[in-house]
Length: 146
Length: 278
Image (cartoon, rainbow over all chains, first blue to last red; front, side, top):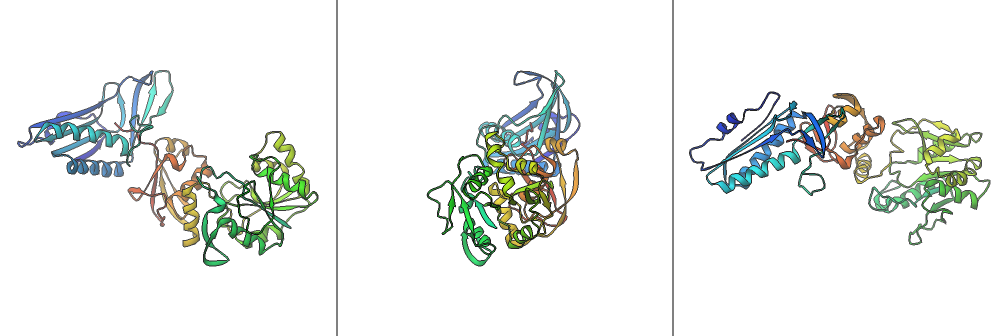
């Protein structure tokens, strides 16, 4: 179970490799990509900022909780910090399990929890020259345990 | 000097009437009592004439005479206006009911250094040094202006006081006027009462929106706060930070903590804006 931050481009293949297990019949990955729009406005790039010690601690906790809650073998997550261009990878989650149902469920759960709880922030730079800090869309207006 | 206690506030952010909150009674240690009763006892130890400003017919004023507003919902100035209408020519010492740390020595200090030649005598807020309107003496010349201020839509008590050109005193007890608008601030007030007040030096780290607002990644801070909430309130007020505790989480020494977590010297505290990873 590893959660890490890095300021260099993410390597999904390496993360996939890190959850490989001959006992696993199912593998599920999620990739968060930087898209060129948000709420109808054109976005040029994002910048991610993290409170690293707590981000890593809370990220690890999320993965441990997933292992207890879902019948999975391994889970890993890596998150980018710093500027990320359009089309770039912001976050990757990889999960392996004996069976696919737990892999799907755990993968979704992990990214949802990471977005809700981990102290990482992103600033959007819009094409019109303005910028602003994003509130996680998943959490806004939804009850969510913290 | 007549003392007027403001018990008519809406207590919107607290979610319940601040005047009725149970607290330890400073003058009768060990006996829980309503904040209003505590202030009444405090005021009565200083002056025989204590009046409660309220529009609530169900409020038990513990034997004190009550004074309703002429213009309810117009804030503290309405209480001043009503007092002036009832007792023209009289000065008044106004006390907000959410001063959980107010002590008799502070009130006596205010009375001893009253400058009757100025429209008002008050204390400077310990954070921003601006005049504090809810523990202040208002002379009749000042009270006469309350009605006009209300009519002009200028109901802010602080602006009203500043425009009077008051005599401004330094607080002998720096936390005496720390107010309690939210549950987190109430816990801070109780923590100060329970643990006492002493300066602590610690580090605060800022991220994202708070980093930009403060203009710093981190700073060493000396605080009189007991809890994380108290510390944030000091910083928010001093630096006009754009988020309040309802929108933030806090962390102490590398892990999430409660707003009521007690601070210690050399802690590393982080106030966490709404997160947006992924």
